[in-house]
Image 1 (cartoon, rainbow, N blue to C red):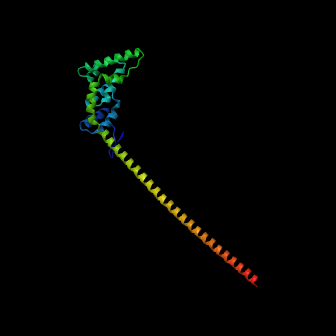
Image 2 (cartoon, rainbow, N blue to C red):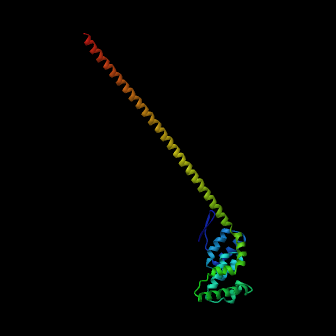
Image 3 (cartoon, rainbow, N blue to C red):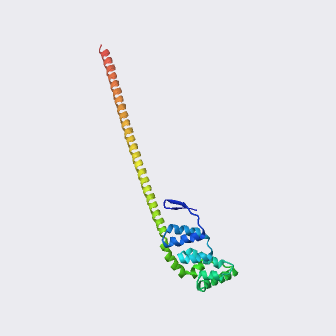
Length: 223
């Protein structure tokens, strides 16, 4: 598979045992990205190995998945598996047998048994300790959260800048519109003034013409 560690890209092809070594070393030295890579690559592990490594390296989901698989499995749990799961070969395996009996009983009664929820309930104390320890390996989640917060902040800044630019464009358009309105009003006032002047000139011409006519008529009457 191709992976990227910050700005470094490389192709990794490892065997299952090599990935287990990577998981162990990365967990010990807190190489968290490598740890997550190894967990993703080792999802194909069998149930017993998931339980064993989940307990050893604090991977709660593997423990739940592994125990659930054993509860659902039709075949019996052999001694070698029992020892790998629990060195005492008593505690964990006994609980698993009880869960397997419950599964069969519920199945016969045509009821539904949520295996994972029963596993989580039965092993809740152990899982609580594992999950608490597992938090030490979740720094990447914090980094993701920080990156998400940075991205959200950048998006907010971009939105604010875009709104400011839109407001600035609106103000500029309003100024242009206001200027055009002023110029239009000025032109209308000028045209009105020209019209009034023209009317005044026409009125004065008419008055002069009327006076001339009146004077002419008066002169003829006198003669």
